[in-house]
Image (cartoon, rainbow, N blue to C red; front, side):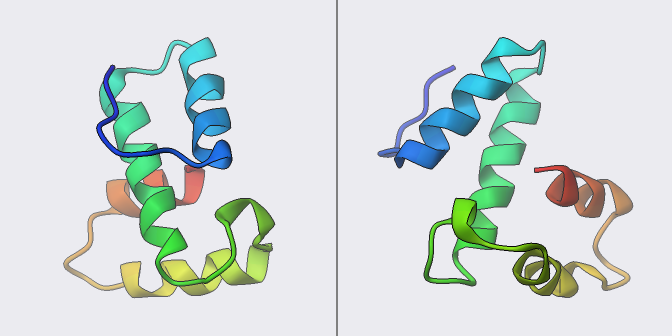
Length: 77
């Protein structure tokens, strides 16, 4: 799997951890995308955020047009 953008140390660790498990390339890409979207809501790196920050970033997903699959994948990422 080829990632085309520069990676932070956290993103590299996350990618390496997922590659050690039998995750599909689509699951890995979706998880990295979910964490990147979460990171746009807060200035610190995602690995420094707490549970309250993560819940706040997920609130926009609780709308009828967002599928349950997207909500679950975002929470797992």
